[in-house]
Image (cartoon, one colour):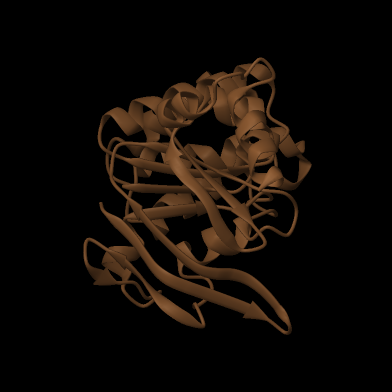
Length: 243
């Protein structure tokens, strides 16, 4: 899936959350969206997910304009906010089943895949527990399982590296995301952690006050920075502040 944003603006009251954002996101890459609080990271993801409409500009997928009413296109992407919604009063298994049914991913092999991922994330013993009884990290793992089974063409994840998952869960997530990118999926995630983005991304998009200040590969950024003892991205950000 080729994702295109063209001169996208989003304004809340007097705040311009996105300012003429233009991006071209080819398939098969992991893209980190970096920025401080209020930079526009979550707004960008919500525009891509169709949860909010840009005030100006357009978002297209393979040249097709996106709308929440287009179910075929909608099922080609999954958005996970920083606190993913759940069927909180339901058990883990029931919640997973409902999510998979929404995406029509509850085929014959779904139960086997659910069990596989529950075991992998060390959640099998909680399969009958209410989702509302889980810790934040456990609940995020549960939210990841439908995404991994659905295998959408576009992953939209808000702060997955600050989700409360334990190191084992984070390692599984990163391995699954890297494997998905190798299959041609696009993984787009937000973070404020420079070191994490530097270790887990192919491209970096730096937002500042709603503007795209940098969108480039990590290798190109490394080539631009002569002294990056404190990290490539830290040096790049420092150079931005100097201009």
